Length: 385
Ligand code: ADP
Ligand code: DP6
Figure 1 (cartoon, rainbow, N blue to C red):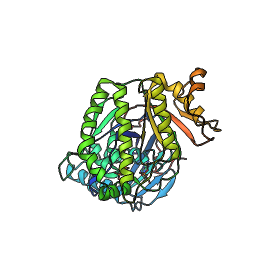
Figure 2: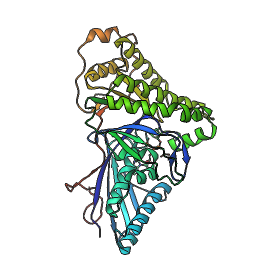
Figure 3: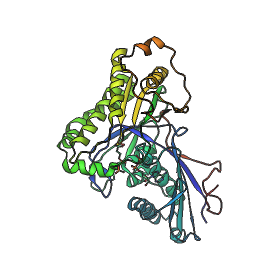
Figure 4: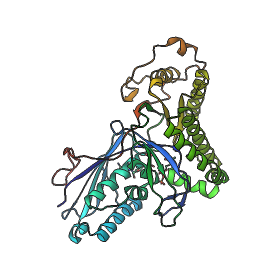
């Protein structure tokens, strides 16, 4: 019988996007990417694992529903962890013969373009690595579940180095700066849709690699300089530069999606309206105060500094009116009292309820092992509650 191991892991949102693999099997990217890790107190995956002789087959439960273990990526992760355990002789053969039960929950929508796979796989491989007592680079294991998951291993600002080796041994994530480095950096996620997306990132990027000429240009000519520049902007806490690169990279990524044949359309009319509102706001302010970025879905992720949060939240509520009394989730904040500024904003309110809600959060730490006993599996390996 094993102990129960429980981990929480964060979501990360890329500011330089990973889009395109050079190896589908090993999940090796065509380009470096950079992200910020978000606070696990607001959004996180939580996973408990155990191995026992009385579990008849490997099991995974996601958000209280038993899912099929017949999932190639999941099996790759478990097989690789067991392979390393065998090599390192970290547990005995009897332990290795037992099946595992994995019980995981996300406290935010799954498979909706909010990076649940990143948090989920980072959580899962870390819990299993501890269960099997192996010593290895966790980001490499997380990458086998989902590419972007390798960045959720660390807190703060993180770079995933694409690497050049065919075996992927140099395709790892590393921390650029920890979560305290830029203490006033804030993130607002504008949730347009929290239902399952149509074209998965994996399928979308596969199609882009096969058909988009713009992707080749991006990988060779745009990303290398952007990665260097954004790392410098992060080190210097140069928000205007950070924001400009973030927005340009999001725009180019979606241009690549449209250049894909047939095109992958992830942004919607409302997403484009958000882009317009942010550019207008920055223009009126006379400086770049907010950046947007969109993953493979219509939801916007805004990066901004804490001092500008009340004004932006008031502006969002004015331009995208809501009937949701619980519109603001996450960290607590105040709204702006500057009615003059809001009244003079040149974009008139859109129709009600185009935005479902917003999540206000900040840059946070990486993985955490839960040691206070609040596991999702009880001592007999059964789901709690
Ligand atoms: P998202 O945009 O939320 O990352 P994806 O469609 O890319 O959506 O990935 C969703 C998939 O990631 C799920 O179907 C599941 O296979 C996996 N996943 C999500 N959360 C978890 C979790 N907590 N534990 C294990 N796997 C997870
Ligand atoms: C647009 O990491 O979900 O969010 O490696 O196939 O699992 P797989 O893809 P995934 O793709 C993420 C794409 C993105 C950009 C990013 O997070 O860098």
